[in-house]
Image (cartoon, rainbow, N blue to C red):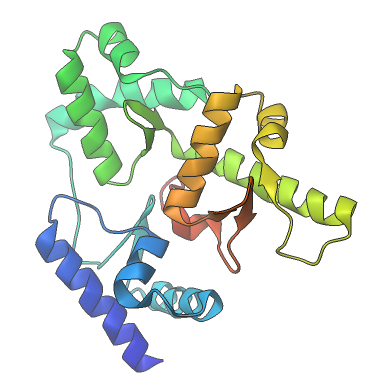
Length: 218
């Protein structure tokens, strides 16, 4: 276990050296860097231990060493604050980058730059190009995916961990359009909360939302 922990710490140090302007890799992206073949349960146990020790910290979707951070300048933070509030208020259907730029008197390129920096700092998540979600909304949607997966298991008499969430069920439960529902589910696949199996999305074994995407003040 100690050897595995050292491999994780070394991988994070190398990642920070290569990409100093990024907060850090997501949980399952880091797993692919360290050992793609490691059992998910063991990987989760290693990360849980490092987080408990404080040797690794989580900020939004990213894991990082305690010595690493990506910070906005006070001017950037002031410009970004109303956009963050608008994203939070938008909940499951947040405004696009162009709308935020228009509403807050920014050039679209400047709004896009600020939003991407916020995403790199772990304060928001980019679901598709020019569409960013506040962590509180993603936390709600992630819980909805888990609820739907558990319902599928009960309804179909399936063993734990085998209930797939389809786009139609997620669309109906969230109130999103089909295209947006698919985009959100694909985002969950990308960050490692779920994985695509056929036409459905399965929760990864041992995957906890707090380790895979943004949570307030994480």
